[in-house]
Structures are given as structure tokens and as C-alpha cells.
Image: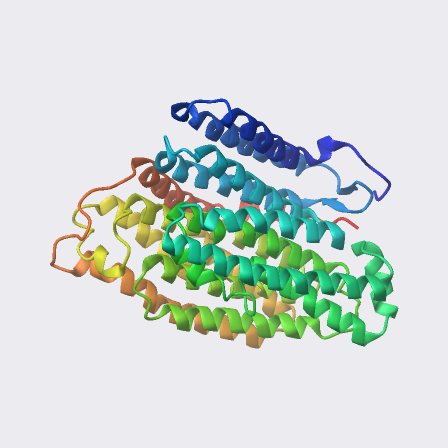
Amino acid sequence: MTGMNENPLDLLPEVLLAGSAVLGLLLGAWLPRHRQWLTGVLASSACAGGTVAAALAAGNPVKTAFGQSFALDTLTATSTIVILGATLLVLALAMPRLHGDPRETEFYVLLQLAAAGALMLAGAQDLLLLASGYVLASVPAYALAGFRKDGPGTEAALKFYVVGALFGVLMLTGITILLAAGRTTSYVTLRTELAQAPSGPVAAGTLALLAGVLFKAGGVPGHFWVPDTIQGSSAPVAAFLTTIPKTGALAAFYRLAAVPLRDAGLPWADLVAVLSMASMTLGNLAAFFQQDVKRLLAYSTISQVGYLMLPVAVAGRTGLDQQALLYYLAGFALTNLGAFAVVCALGQARTIDDYRGSARAHPALLACLVVCLLGLVGTPPTAVFLGKLEVFTAAIDGGYAWLAVVAAVNTVASLFYYLRWIAPAFLAREPAGVSQTTSRTAAAIAYGAATGSVLLGLLGGTFLDALSGPLAR
């Protein structure tokens, strides 16, 4: 179905999130400081309602909304569920830390707007809507990075903004070139037009466009902002930035590869494969000797983006690429947020040395950390293990066996720096660097995320079958 459809209910999750942000901003202007938490409850309700709406919509026939600009298919529905579910967990991490803060409402509003931008990226089927999603996902995120207004936070926000502005200009330039070459911004029409357009402008436009998408995903060459921004941000913001925007950007990347670029006649798949290899290798090498735990997780997410680009490189070539990407995104989001929840729960432990011997004081919490970190490696029976197995299989079936081998080598290598964090916590005889849990809510989220990662891995076959629906055309 590609006719004009302007029913706002088709975008119910996006409408709920945007409406909650606007209403929360108005309420925040009138509520006393000790009641600002109500706007957080409103934001959580919008995320929960949007998740339910997306789950219900997942069973509907594939179609597009507002002409052909927004896709309503399995890719959009699953990405929406992951984004809103992850945002709900980040809200739970942030609310205890922000209670009574004079800018508590502003934080929740910014978080919702950035998440709404990620939703637009995931469902965009028009280059102009993709650009709008990029801006909406970026500008609130800049403010969130510097929300604490301290030195590291200000530096994090500044670096994030400067790199984001650069790649945003590149992205808009690429869209302009592709518009000139294809005479349209609609993905469906571009697929035909780009196949007949001169290869030079198409190549230049595609490179500039993908640079912007990779900035949001945090992959090479748009990764420069990730380590400094994550280290300088508060732990809940770092959890958000390493999870939610990446989900929207990688869904957008996959849709670009599967629809407008599929018949462009350019070796873009080889380019994606090289960028995938560069992201996973650089992320792992840079993480080897990191001491700051947030910085280590930042480089870890860069490497994870490399693995997640494997199904993008073979988009449309196999029957596994879409379900592999979506399942891996869900598993990564849950596992990564679980690791950050432990960091939030032990807020005074900032370096690996601070975790020495901490398993004696917090055995359950450190057990969750082990599950999440080894889960990020791809240890069975966690969700990321099955996700990696799926993306490796998709890469092999799509003709990129060499890339699957590189990814497997990188997976083994990544075990080193995760063990550098885990081993001292359990083996060191020194007393724990942090004796008290600073957030029971964060601890509860860590327990839930670690358990969820294992359950999602055990029940993976059930979910994988539901993730292979067709893309909107």
C-alpha cells in the first residue's frame, strides 16, 4: 500500500512521545520542585504506551504513512519497541538521581525528544524525513551530554556538537546531491532513479549521506565523539547515547541499503564491509588499556556497531539479514543498559581499580556485570551470542565470509578487556573500592537486564521468526 495516508494514529508511538514532551514541559513550568517527578512518570507512561502500540501494530499489514515518507513494517515496529523500551530503562536510571533537581523536567523532555528523533530515523523512507530525524535526535542529545554543567560535561557536549554539526552538514550535502541525481527524495523512487543516474554524483552523495548516519550510529568514521562524550556525560546519559540513537541510525542504515541503494550499481556493500571491519577493530584495540569504565564501554559500543553493520552489508542478499540485525539490536540494547546500570548503581566507582574486590560487597550486582560484559562478548546463552551467530551466518550467506572471520577474531580479542574489568573484582584481595550501592533502582534494573539478556537468548528462536517481515515499498 503506497497511497496517501495521513492518519496520525499510524504514528501513535511518535505522537505519544512528542505529546508527552510538550505536556511535560508545560507541567514543569507550574509544578513545584518536589513534584517534578510527575513529568518523569508522564514520560515513562508515554514510552510504555508507545511500546504497546508498536507491538500491536507489528501484526498489521506492511504499509506507508504520509505518502511514502514513513514506513510501517517489521523494521520500524521492532526498532520502536527497542528504542522505547530502552528509553524507559534510562528514565528509571535517571529519576532517582534527578529527584528535586531544578532542571528535572528539562532532562525528561530532552530525553523524549532525542528518542523521538531515533524513532523518526528508524521509520524514515524519505531523505528529508531522515534529515529531520537526524536533527531531532542530535540537538537534545547535545544538551543532555552537558546537562551537569561541569567541566567534563561541557567538554563532552562541545565535542559532540562540533562533530555532529560537521557530519550534519555532510549529510545534508549528500541529500542535496542525491536529490539532484535522482530528482526525488523518496526511497522507493530513488531505487529506480539512482540506477540510471551518473555514478559520480551518486557515489559522492551516498558517501556524504552515510557519513551522517554513521555519526549517529557511532561507527567509523563518525566515531570521534563517542569516548570523550560518554566519559564526560552522566552515567544515565551515557547509557542513552550508546544505545537509543544507535538503534535508530542502524535501522535507517539498513533501510537505505535495502531500498534506494540496492540497485545503484556501486560497490557500497564492500564499503560497508570495510567500515564494519574498521569499527570493530578500532573499538576493540582502543578499549584494551582503558581504565575509566565509561570510556571502556564507549569503545565497546564502537566495536558493537562494527558487528551490527554485517547484516547491513548484505542487506537484501539473504533471508537472515533483517532478523539478524533486529535481534542483535534488541540483545545489545538490553545487555549494554545492564552494564551501565551496574555503573549507575556503583556511582563512585569510576575506574577498573575502583572495582577491585567489590564482588565481596556486592556479589549479586557483580554477577550481573559478568553476565552483561560476557554477554557483549557473545557468550552463550545470552542474547548477543545468538545475535552474533545470526549476523555471522548472514554475512557468510551474503558472500562476506572473510568479514565473518574478522568479526570472530575481534570477538575473541574483546574478551581481554572485559576480563580486565571482571577479574580484579572477584580475585583481588583488597577491600572493595566502593562499599555501598548508591542506587537501588539501578541495581534492580541491572538484575532485570541481566536476566532479560539470558531469557532473550534462550527464547531467541521464538523472536527470530517474528522479525523477518518484508520492508515497506
